[in-house]
Image (cartoon, rainbow, N blue to C red; front, side, top):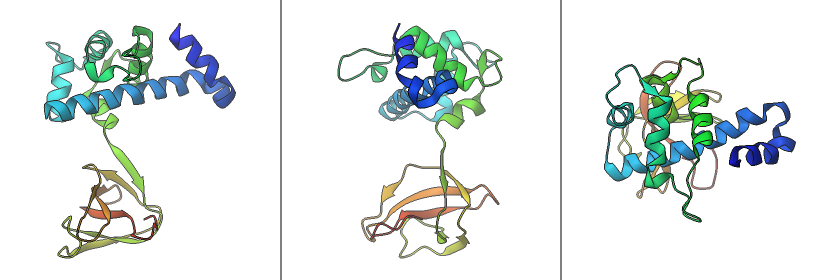
Length: 186
């Protein structure tokens, strides 16, 4: 019932792609709950994957995914203490299981937690978080895609919000500012 209402509400926004849009929204909500659980438990991504996978060793099944998230306090809405229902969790699972194999691999699961950035202005990538002592690894060009490896954090010394990233083009690892002090986006 909740799924049908969500699809109906999404109709004017997404037309024929409504189920995919709703599933993506549900998956985002489930992923946020998993992030919160992971942070609260101080678990590695591998440990969380293994916890959800349970005794099965060939990936996370739909049944394990649904059961795990249904029992997760972080998956409950703070406004009304309701969580995602079974149909919603199954739709979220199908969104991850893009090949339809009935299992989510470690790589597919890991992709849920990967933040991607697109460089919009040239900027230097440094070898340390602290920009005042870091050495430039290389200059990033506009249009380059970066994978976020750690959540962004504010550098108190410079006032910049910086993140540890990997350049998709060549695998270079380093730190970049996401925005300048005056609001310029990088």
